[in-house]
Amino acid sequence: MKITIIKVGGAVVEDSAQLAALLEGFKKIEGYKILVHGGGRRATKVAAELGIESKMVGGRRITDAAMLEVVTMVYGGLVNKNIVAQLQSLGINAIGLTGADMDVIRSHKRPLKDGVDFGFVGDVDKVNAERLKTLIDAGMTPVLAPLTHDGAGTMLNTNADTIASETARALAALYDVTLVYCFEKPGVLANPDDDTSVIPTITRNDFNRLTADGTIFGGMLPKIENALAAVEAGVKKVVITKADSIGNGGTVIQSEN
Image 1 (cartoon, rainbow, N blue to C red):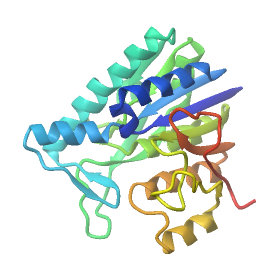
Image 2 (image 1 turned 135 degrees about the horizontal axis):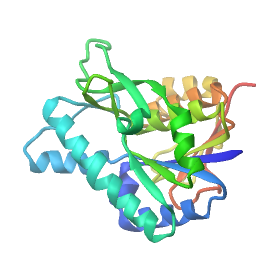
Image 3 (image 1 turned 90 degrees about the horizontal axis):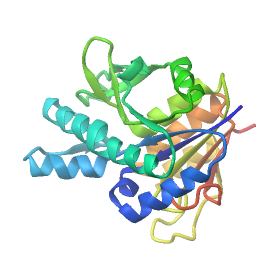
């Protein structure tokens, strides 16, 4: 059985036209599917309105107690339910979930890394593929927010790219999985100012080289790291592309074999 996991970034979620195009493309995907969404830009905006400073390190958000409340509200509430409502209007019986719902994604609080305390940020321990399959078999389309939990009552902010990758890896034992990362650019670009400079394929060796020479940087680093982890764990195909171009073009992340 085939399943397609689409991850949509916060920039697309923030733009109603881009989001509408993404959801129309999502509707056309045949077979089983899951949508994983971000929402970082909206969280940053809401935090600023509340007088809470946003801090980022290496493309990842520092999440203190105040920011955890913001991301839980924004990701699990505002963004997630808006997407679910729009999917329902398209005839897709979507169900919005955080990792805490049905215990589908459990994480641990990230330890200090290179002296950086990321706060209430979760690194995924397990995705319960069987429970997701139960929903899918019942005709539902899961919409996953970038929030997990530690099993001890604490929510954790978890990178949406990581959730998409870990979910794809877990479901690879049950399905033929394709993972697609959608954002505002047509793929990974050799020149960030030139949308025609899409790099067609990236392997682990390519990634190391492109990181070393500065071609790949910032928020694209964890995205490709997660994509590589997915293909190296048995996910059939990972694509990074534009929100309105699902199934067309983009950058294919592949193993060295």
